[in-house]
Length: 175
Image (cartoon, rainbow, N blue to C red; front, side):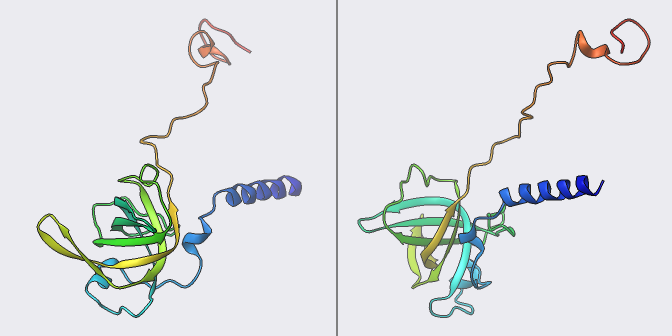
């Protein structure tokens, strides 16, 4: 009996080890500053280290760096942006090198860890918008979620003529 309990606990532990949060997203000291607070310049120190995430709005690869325009969403405990209509505004995150816009496409979820730099003003339509800007230390592109989860197992003994297996009354197969 104790062997079965120990085996069950070990299997649960192994399964939990397979479903961990990406380390770059959760490690190290992170400021609780939000993009909206950074935009309003509340409690922003030089080189403040933050972890923000959201939905990619635009990817702009340059000669030496790639910048992401991101619509910020609150992060869950694993660092993934929550699906909600509420937002903390927009921010820009830049990193050295090339990131393919086909891979880092619009509406994908991205979490970045980085340090704040000087804010940048860009136009949204006719409106000037002050974007908090950060230099990326680490980033994580989250896998796309499917619209529904399909049950992967098809039971070959479901339905006619196998529906009457077992004890019962009437016509059918019985054990």
